[in-house]
Length: 206
Image (tube, rainbow, N blue to C red):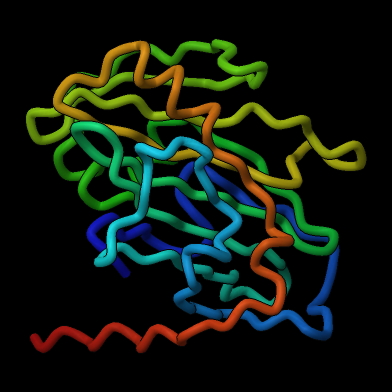
């Protein structure tokens, strides 16, 4: 889908729990491009932006017995880039989360080239709790992150999962503390937004 392709709709590191059937108005297997101004993933920092060649995507689960929507967005940041995923469970569907490293390794580039992984840490920035983990990628220093959300009350799972990673030539603490709290997530922004279907990936010839 982009330079930071995410593998699958039910992402590695996340498992969906379902107690429902298909609901009217929800389309399984939807893969569309959405205007970045209408993306649920936004940043309030003026130094963070999606370049003209960047895209914002929305993908829904291909399984009829679960309902989940994944929003993806690429950003340019000072000295590098960031990729962010906001995964929202639909009606009677819940998310259980695996380890952070597995989650961000759904990005092909991270899975193939991420090295020197540090130990996960729990920390608070801008009043929000995160799980973070450092690693190296193509000569840049990187931080994987996941927003720590409250579990759903009715099942041992979560209503949403937000995670991603940021890499820069010099990803110092000041940049991380400025970047992560600048992100906001609101699926209402995407309601009734125009979309462009993404053509299926052509099958590789053997």
